[in-house]
Length: 186
Image 1 (spheres, one colour):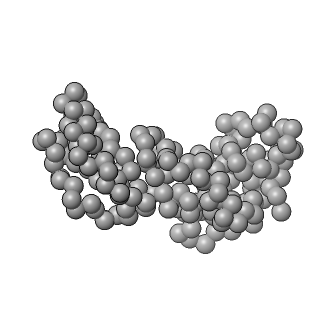
Image 2 (tube, rainbow, N blue to C red):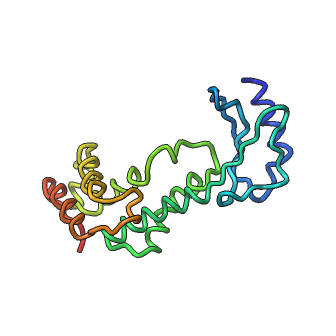
């Protein structure tokens, strides 16, 4: 799709300095409902839009993707999980999340949001709960899946939509961790 790439480059030259634009990319995905598009990741919440941007550019559709809703969704999950399971204050979770700042804000092309928040959080829960010498040896996909299931099996999605028994969740997670000599911090 050389034409789309050329259009994206021209669009980027014209609009990349806008302070609310985090990234400009392109989508060549085509179906009966989609067409090749210029994708603009914006530092906005839905349904906010950058009014100065055209809906079409060089005949291609321009799609504004407001990333702050997704970013806040992930941060809320992580704050809840780390707070309830590891005893982390919100500030520590936000400090940990800075490693993902570019991905959370879609400042570059990434598949970050193709994984759910648990994908990034569960390895931390496991690592923080196992004896230091064993932590890396026991980070297996099976343990990751078992811890994820222990948390998700009894709650809504997202987990904050209904009452949730975090003490029971801690016990279910501890059962999984015990097989590797681990335990959630008190």
